[in-house]
Amino acid sequence: MNSSDRRKIIIDCDPGHDDAIAILLAAASPKVELIGITTVAGNAEVDKTTINALKVCEIAGLHEVPVAKGAGQPLVRKRETAPDIHGDSGMDGPMLPEPTKTIVEEHAVDFIIRELLQSDGDITLVPTGPLTNIAMALRKEPAIAPKIREIVLMGGGTFGNWTPAAEFNIYVDAEAAKVVFESGVPIAMFGLDLTHQALATPEVQKRIREIGNPVSDFVEELLQFFMQTYKEVFGFDGAPIHDACCVAYCIDPSVFTCRKLHVDIETKGEFTYGMTVVDTLGTTGKEPNAHVALELDIDKFWNLMINALTFYTEKK
Image (cartoon, rainbow, N blue to C red; front, side, top):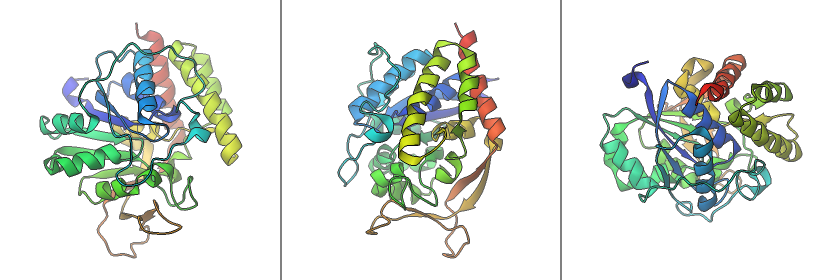
């Protein structure tokens, strides 16, 4: 494949078990060019998520991909993390050495702005954590908005997992999400309606275990921990690989069925703060502002993942 045909992406993340798998999927695909990774506070504090991103880069062999540390706090609210789901480190389970790879000196927001302004309008932003960095970049330099090809984000849904109404990534910084959804930039939203279909069941984990390379072994360790917490907290029989759905969409959109809908972000409700209000029936009369992913081709998705992890067997 010609390098010009590859989709350029920046992953903005808070690793996070599923963020780590999203990075590994991107690194293995010839259809995307990972031009940078930026980090944000979310699943854990930003210092921890940044170390986790560096560790994933090392195991994936991403020695040249820059990693930039970003926002450590939401725009206006107190920081909230998810140790019950991801452990204290944000990526508990696997035992990895401290990374030798280091971050770039540039703040994540400035990295995003610079890359976009220098681009031909062909960079896709893939935020898999709270949207703080993306909102800050849009606020600091509005000229980037028309330069963003698309924002492919994990967040939201028609139900919640952090509160009855709100999904974690949106809840943690709903004000940032509001900035992003009202920016006019093309958005593809991968919320819980979709990502709960991307369930790493024991059968899927067996397929991953049988690959038998260091990266697939690492993913299996991630999934063992992640599956256990999802079973204890939510009663799931597997681990939903939320964030990898965003990268899978960048690789092959046919894996998903989406609808163009209007999504509002609730920032004032006593019980509904952080809710993504998805207008499935068109009752508001507002123009759609997001492609909302609703159905997953499960076989296609897991074949994509297995092929990606198998790639690391051949990579020397």
